[in-house]
Length: 278
Image 1 (cartoon, rainbow, N blue to C red):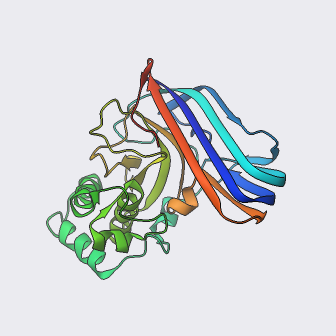
Image 2 (image 1 turned 180 degrees about the vertical axis):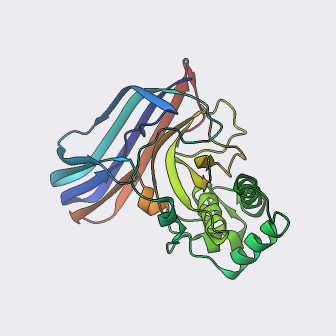
Image 3 (image 1 turned 135 degrees about the horizontal axis):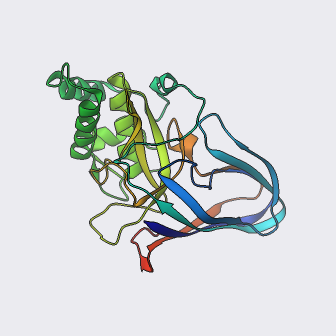
């Protein structure tokens, strides 16, 4: 499938900032699941700094802008050809061992209710393959955390979302990571884009899902929000231990006051516009 992406991120500052520094992971992953046809990341006034492929195999670039600056806009456009491998991440070169993703962060730290949910889920699957356990954990996540925008914040933890029983793809992904790690399965947070011509599919400005490590298969994606393994409707950008670590855009500013963030995303296939926009 050929997918085209238009992704505009705009920061508006209430008080002009003196300087802005950001780290970007805005280029699709290099793997057999997808082939970049064209891809551009445009920023006016920005000075591009170091660019490198990190240990997780993701392309990272630093940028800086000297102020005074009352607004900053990043425009990402491109076309990618995707292939469905039933969620299995194919030919993605990385140096970080899967065992590194057994360590929780503050956002995926296991609570007692999460521990009990993991134990209950796996109690009926003793001796079953890891892949079957992973699917069961993804199903439990969707059942216990209903997709409902506006109920959580960007800093909400897996434990908090699990107790609340509501959240968005970020929360569901954090919960799935926590459940997997409690079950001894390495798990990580993945960001990217999802094309959907149907409103039945849950998606946001930057979609998120989890990858769990399965013996003999490698990393396998699980989108608990939609109850599927990522297929050719997905474009993978990068991964991390949680949403903060995997964020496509991270940065800091010097000076200034409050800021407002506006994100607009359109994903198209063959001229058909998807639902993923904010």
